[in-house]
Image 1 (tube, one colour):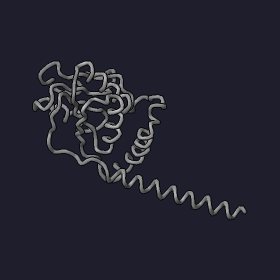
Image 2 (cartoon, rainbow, N blue to C red):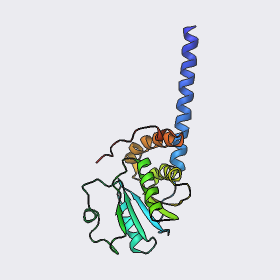
Image 3 (cartoon, helix red, strand yellow):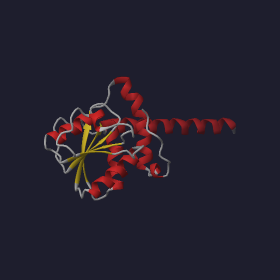
Image 4 (tube, helix red, strand yellow):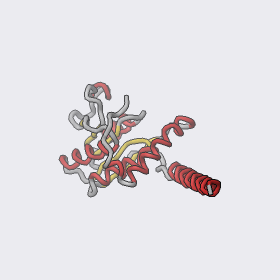
Length: 188
């Protein structure tokens, strides 16, 4: 009896590992391709936390691809001068300070877009994070047209170190669990 239960337990564990591993492989394969072009929309929203994101948002603004820029999830002590040398076309950059998570970014972007009556927003984040960011934003602002601007991910082991937690967070967001969890402070 015990041996039979042990075999079934091992079989279930192997099946769960196989399904989880397959899902993870599909998650990595389904990442949106990084874009070299700069898309256009009413505005852009940068989710802080990764190299190249703010610079890309500024390039969208400076190039006339968007009319406004939100940098979401900015630490309270950070100023525009800390992020950019000179603010292009003064006053078109907003620092969002309320977001502490991707769900918080989505709420912050949705409120900002609604207050400015925006119909479309380019979302700037890395490939690995894009699907979850877009999923959360579409929940927070269903009528907003979201234009993804995925940036290249880190490579090698750095990618794998970030990919596993991001996969688990994506599964939680996909299942709607992220709305049930308390937001936590963002890391440094």
